[in-house]
Length: 478
Image (cartoon, rainbow, N blue to C red; front, side):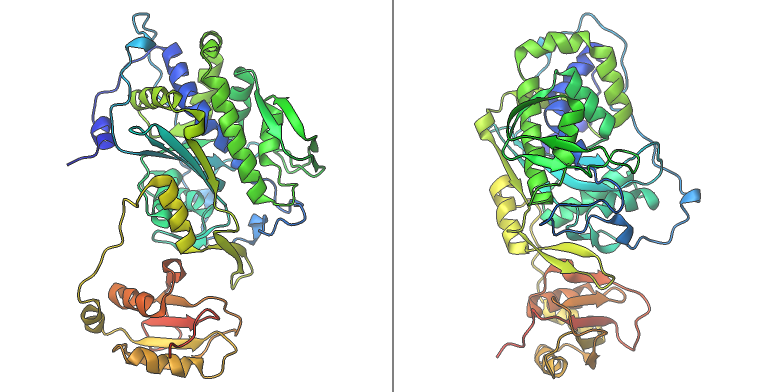
């Protein structure tokens, strides 16, 4: 049976007047979605605050070798098709959201500076989830340096997914690959995406009259970057402040506090809720309608989403019904990740999978995509006849040989052992040079390796099909 959201997508689109589209956009997008714009990373070589332990320099990222001059850029799609004015339409006649399944939206902040065009990265991503039955919601922030599996492309920072989706013209573009990456990482389905840039955030905040935020600590950021590789210093004192669009953007983007990206994620969520509080006030509706042409043009040019008009309207009405105390926020912070340096020198955040699963289940209920149980996995592994090499990436003498003997107890075909290119591997890695899913899955079970430590490769440096690089997290069981 199809889910409620899938059924809803097959319905004819409602033709709405221009002013109704503005109300829809503000009701759902300005309340949650426009807040994601401050997730943008800034200029290369940005000076960061002491204590911000993730690497902000995107120049260190090893990109695929692609001639961008020949790349077909994904077009900037309009939010919705503009409909002719229809004075007979009334918002009061709109039907409320009638689905019973949880609705989850991925918010993407697009790192687009000056007048640059071409493939773009995202920084931090946000998930907004709504339970229409219990009238609860949650917002989860994911750091941009999270080390994840990008489907079909291997391990990389999560902010690379959107970029690679555009470079390789992935079906649906960058947003589609970003959605699939987050779904794979968290094990939850995502119904919609919304991608936003700087202009949408600043102009919408100004059009709703600004927002009120409570600043917990003073911030002084003399190297806050402008949009064109320069500086635009920012400072704010602790206390309650009324912020316009430009100031709200700076407050949400700055990293000049001790907690760096983690603090920034918390500020971003406070701005989300401040926008919501401003928009859902009934006395804001007439003002927004008077400013409809300007607001619509802003959203038309700077927001990209796969929602239909009727879905946006109904979700907007649903969001307004959720009490503030029923909206929970969380950040994948240093309780859920640890710092690691990759072989090519990149500093990344490696997920602590069990901790993240616990957080996910708290916010999103039990996972909708369970891990399959494969019957007779060991027999299927043997049938693949994969030749396995075990390389020691630690300073523990003889670990590769001991591991070979251990794996042979489970009928693994270990044909080669040796030393890795370094003895400083912190975690154990598996590289599959081909297609040996059952062998890899059985190795994951026996070695207790996180799935994100699995990657694919080509042209191995020996006569083997699967390579295991032992890290400091592995010791042979007694």
